[in-house]
Length: 469
Image (cartoon, rainbow, N blue to C red; front, side, top):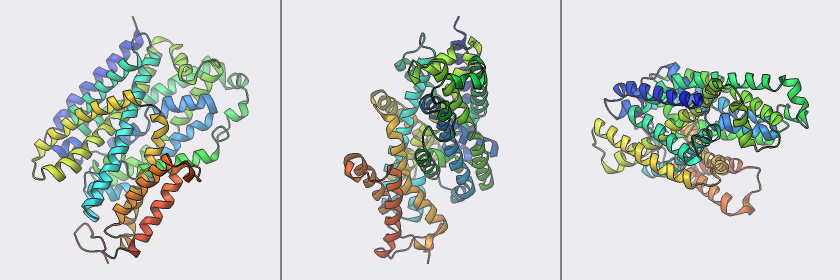
């Protein structure tokens, strides 16, 4: 009897039970489905944000990197946490008060239709990239920790069924309520396995004796280096202000204050978990120094007693489920709200729009699964894709805090500039004079936004439709 597998099956069953309960709350129309009827309280906003951030990259990914570089890999989740806190302090209330459903909708509200279109294109590229990554992570977790049951392909298929099913059944209510279960599970699992693994390795002192260059491995920054850590902070702070799947959580809050508190508390909760995952990677390096980073962590987990291993497996997979469902719903929301409703059927009824959104959940779920099954190097491209959010973040910040210098073409020009920078960075190596594309994105997009008023004198309008002086 494979106890670990049974634990995972029970976990999946619990998620679907929660989703069917959530379906009742999400059945009144599109807003209740994609935005939870704008009724999420602080607790649900908090667990939703933690659910998005603490995914496969923040657990398995951090542990694998720590196997190579040490404790400094934990800064990844600190960067996420700081981004969430700043979003709570600066942006969450503002987004909620706009009463919109998507970032592109905000672009059109203040700027123009072409600004919305270019934002939709950029957001869809980002969202599909992130969503595809979740299938790869989910399949990798199941196949590496239960190799007798799953291959990478079958693990991806099961992951896809769960991701699509949960999102399809209850929308944002599903993801929010499932995260009430997922977040405590993932934290409990990671804490338990880290403590057991450290004890298994004979304690921190004995572990350090088994690792060459232990001083570097246990140094807070030396392994990765400060420049790389700074890039993480810039990228994660930038994406927290403008990726649809992240921002959509603020649209779901019952009020602006709940949005603000949820992002701040969520950010604080994110900060320590990365260093626990990093410590787990260090233990794996000390215990299994001659295997790949990918295989060392599963060996550590499967060496535990079956029940602890099963809980840990469910916890790591829960991390991936949380991220995947939010991102898949965000992708479907972009297509239903910013493509179908805006350009195909503007007068569609709420319940019919909910059905259309559910169709997009399934279609996009299948498309992103096939993208994931064919993708190579998607992990290395993720940070590049997230850098595209720079343009959207700049537009949001100036729109809310300095609208007097915004012009009708500011959003469109800045978004196009961001896409051009990304394309050139990929295709023309000679332009890579900066350490990371995120620096180029900020310099170019900010410059384009600030010089646009020199050529465009038409001011934007406020939410009430009045031209801003």
